Amino acid sequence: TELDPTDLQNALQQSCVMKIGTDGLMHEEPLSAANRAEFVRQVEHRHLKAMNPVLTAFLTGLGTAVPAPFLPLFTPEELEVLLCGKPEIDIELLKKVTEYDTSVEGVTEDAPHIQYFWAALEQMDQVQRANFINFVSARSRLPNSVDEFPMNFKIQGPKPGAKSDPDKHLPSSQTCFFTLSLPFYSSQQVCYQRLLYAIENATTMDDDFTNREEWGSGNAS
Figure 1 (cartoon, rainbow, N blue to C red):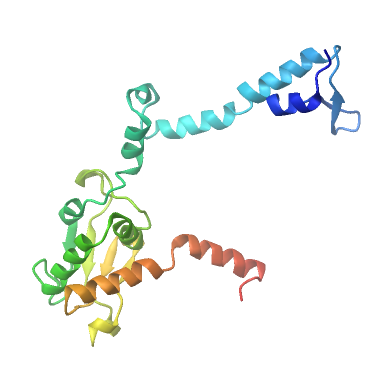
Figure 2: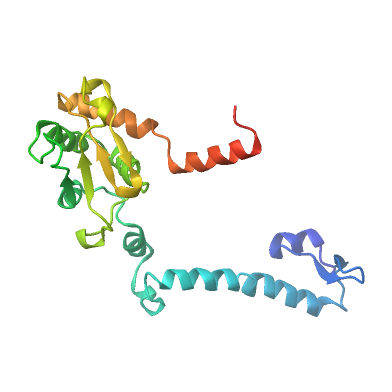
């Protein structure tokens, strides 16, 4: 029975034999009894071996975090947590790695605006908390333990322009240093509103790269 090329294409993503012609270019050769063995070899390579270099590179990279012999010990969900951290933001964990810039008067753990800040984080849902972590660190998850933090989270005093009439100013951050500059807000609600506006409207690192590409191509308005 003659095979329909469409059936082959649908089943194997290939319906002919690919050969390099005398012009050095790849050409399609209709499938026949004479070239069917080459067809089978090409299909086998496409489905079983073509991705080997990519998968080998992926496994090598993954092995730097989790040795390859140990990978079968984990479920996909356990590996995700091990490599990426938990999707839930643990505020108590964040508190354990927080330091306060006490060189600035009024920036202490017991200061009212610091307490408003932690209460505002408690008020947020998990998506909002992830947005906050992205705002201060350029990643949306926390490490799994205190020992895994590359640096402490630091709360600094407000920027010079935000010292006067603080409720009118937004917090700012430095993602490379995992720091937050927090104005001396007058209440938890004001702190919550200003934080929420900042984390939902701040330009991300991805936006920065996008803008650079647009500027380089002359497409920015």
